Image (cartoon, rainbow, N blue to C red; front, side, top):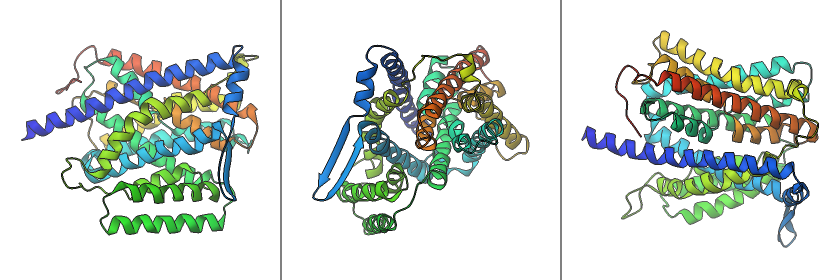
Length: 405
């Protein structure tokens, strides 16, 4: 029975890793395409595409935004919806449901958010506009991190991959809280009332045991529109909707409704939404960029926060938790391998880009471009460092058993 359970767990992990690894490769391709488009004769077409006005009108009600904001506010809400589904599943029956295994990734995620934010704030202290970006280096991109981890090979123990997955989920949850608390604009009371009413309807559907997904998604659409108009960022509606999706099986089904929806959405998000978001948000013009551009406070704070802050925060907090007896080193992993994964947590990319769009959306393009430069440089440095450390640590099998992909 244990062996069967272990094989099932390994199959789930393998599929997840394949999806996330492929997504990481697609993200890299989207990044390259965006950079080529912005630094070639196609720049005008690239900019025109992102600024293409898209309008939805029903009577006197309308939503009119450029294509870029439909991607960032609309499609990314689906990404956050998937995160919400994963968080709920992990808390109920996954890695986050076991107190013995949840301590280390949560502690690591806390360190990986606090220390990078402190480094960024220290470098940008005294500039209130720049300080709005304090949360940018506090995010971890699970797709890129797992892609780099996969490139290392099969000597990395499965327990370490589970640790990284759980840490990234905890990190995403922290990012959601940060966005809700610190990156909201002027609030509309009427829209918030509508959002609260839609949330109440979702709660009633869940409590009455409704298993059909259609009512949840229809009410969820109303909730998304209300949150979009409220001043709270629309992507948070995705997380809220996910909390009410039933974790119960419909008659004749092997998976719960939440698991089915997660299974259906994961490929679309990994292969479509995230690469499209990366393509729309990583176009940086190299014209006039010098080493001095990277040494400006905003990009320097982000780059150092991602590269140094995450490895110091994640590794430092995990070391303290293990030495104090609150947690254990992942099974089969060495200290050097744990340090390598801590370095990989500095790959911010998707979530960092998203938070940067919120932090500097009202301050003009200058900060945004500097911001993207810091994210790219810091993430690249963290990826290379993590890969090198893990290759070095994996030349000999770590103490304990390992499980291959």
